[in-house]
Amino acid sequence: DALNYFKKALKRERHLNGDGSILAARILHNIGLVLASNGESLAAMNSFEEALHIRQDKLGPGSEESAETTAQMIKLLDEIRIQSGIGERKFVKGNNGTLVDIDVGTNLLEWGEYDEAERVLSECLDFVTSNKEATDDEILKAQSAMAALFRAQGKYKEAKQLYLEAMKVARKIESRALSNGIPPVFKELNTSTSSDKPLEIDISIINSIAGYAEILRKGGELWQAKDLHKKVRKILLSAKSKRLNIRCGNTIGIYSTDYVNESKSDRVVEESEIDLHLAISHTQLGCTFFALKKYNDAFLEHQAALDIRLHSLEFTDAPISESFNYCAETLCSMENNSDALPLSLHAVHVRKLEFGIRHPAFAHALSVLSKCYQGIHRSSEAFECIQWCLDICEAIFSANHANLIPNVLAKGDILHSLGYFEKAAECYRKAKDIHTTNFITGQNDLQLEEIQKKLTHATMATSNKGCSSTLNEQPYQRWKKKDG
Image (cartoon, rainbow, N blue to C red; front, side, top):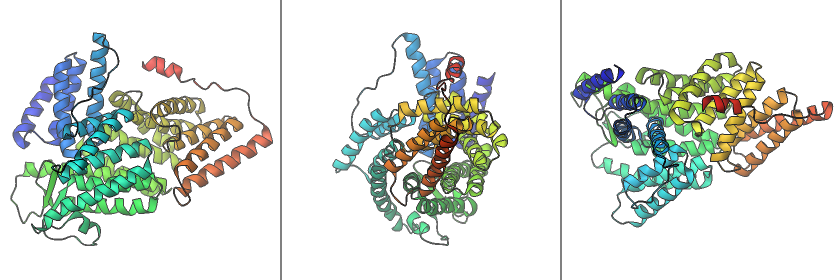
């Protein structure tokens, strides 16, 4: 029955808004889920592939929605391989330098296969930069994908340099709009008022600007990141409140209603597309405020993203779980752990289903859940969550990846509350070592102050009371057995 209703909904959506709408992609994703649960693997894969094509085209290959569909595809492929006795997946080297290869590399990044993604994307970037026939759009896409990978790997210096190069290409692309009298995005970034002329926004340009702001955040240059994210959000808010998005594909055209006459259904579809990009912008700004310890501001941004996504997506979609997770994390920092717990539990459940139990997205959800449990004095369960989280992260990230710092700190907090002061101090020392490896003076100083404060308290507690004897480091094994 569910499959029939989804098919009817898809037929109606395609009749009203065409084959490539975001809502059509969401319905196709749900059809794939139903078909997969019924054992119709080939039909499910076809549905997922069509949904992924639309989501990558509309929202970008690195979007949460694209990752959600990609994760289901790889999960389905793994099940097929296991059933057929083929074993673990292997990656076959294909032709170099095509946009398809870039999408393959981006999908590998979304799966957490960083080494293989680096090989594919490096070859693509070398090809487009050395090929005189390559377009600026192809170069920008390759540079942005490689920069996103470097950011995920914790190679912040390399990522920043590549984003700067991508921004130069983006400016070149945008300069074409001047001949048509269209005010460019970079001009909008540097002005306090919006133009009354039509504004054409190429989503790849917006993504490159936001990507650069994200690497500033990850690299500890938080105030610059905040300013740039606020400017990107301002452009998207202006587009939503004053103008109308009427163009599909790689470029989003946003025009004043004085210029065009369109149907109501067109308006709804295109405004929802802007909304989803706006939700991403709210989320990125919220994470920046969180790093600045401005928790009230961070919570408002994550709430804004959640409101948009609840209006536009299904309750069990991955982007909603992302917003729940960030809201829960912020509430924990505001000492509202009991309110955070149900949000976190939902995020863990959805991310386990959508991404699997070896993905960084699931690890982050476990980390937040550990903070929720710790805040309501359920330290044993908190320890299970954080230990599992760290095992996932250590299998994916390099030994000194900056993403490990908050998780190591969370483990130290739990150990401290259990009376294992020396082990807690070891965690804080490890966090400090990772911090000094990744950041210089002036970068992410607030985090370093937090680490030093925790380390001082644990050291004092150790000298005053001594440390407890033994601790079982892997009680979470019962979780893994239960959850498969």
